[in-house]
View 1 (cartoon, rainbow, N blue to C red):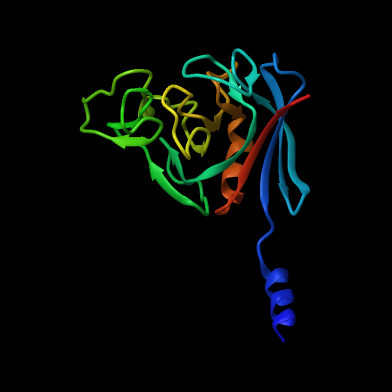
View 2: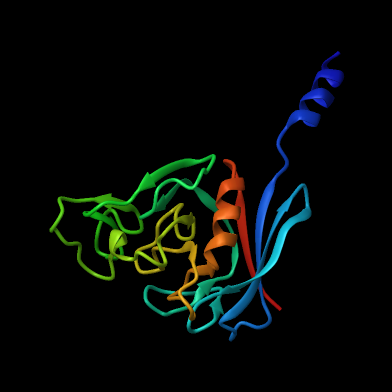
Amino acid sequence: MLELLAAVLALHAPCPQLIVVEAPSRASTHATIRFEECGKAVLGPWQARVGRNGLAAQRHEGDGTTPLGTFGIGSTIYGVGANPGVQLAYHRLVCGDWWDGDPSSRRYNTFRHLDCGARLAGDSEALWRQTTAYRHFAVIRFNAAPVVPGRGSAMFLHADTGGPTNGCVSVHLPQLVTILRRLRPGAKIQIRAD
């Protein structure tokens, strides 16, 4: 009886979701991106951009590389635009919404809301001011558990701005929205280079 119940539950369990980002080399600023469910591609491949200095397994704050590896996707989608219809929680950015990029901060590599007009130190990002890149974005949970000061912060899957990123992964806005709408809790992103 328990075996039958386990089999039924397995049939109704959601398939694992994986965003796959593949660059032709570690030095590349171009990549492809596809979305997989149950190990099969269901979206893409599409063109994507990665860090201005390529990809790296070992990186540090501000080096302009995209981290190699497999990472979780944050449970909240953010953006300066209205919720595009995502399944995950959505936070519409307002004045005072920052990503803490100060390695000396105890809240390094986390979202923070301050009073409008207040500032954060270091390479912290005023998220609401990035109206093109951050129209909508998902957090790539790089350097998240545990957070290592100086290893890197603010790694996002965001909208393309026409060039390489500072370490994030970007894709054209229509494809980004398609991906974000499909994401469920537990989704992961895998970033690799041939």
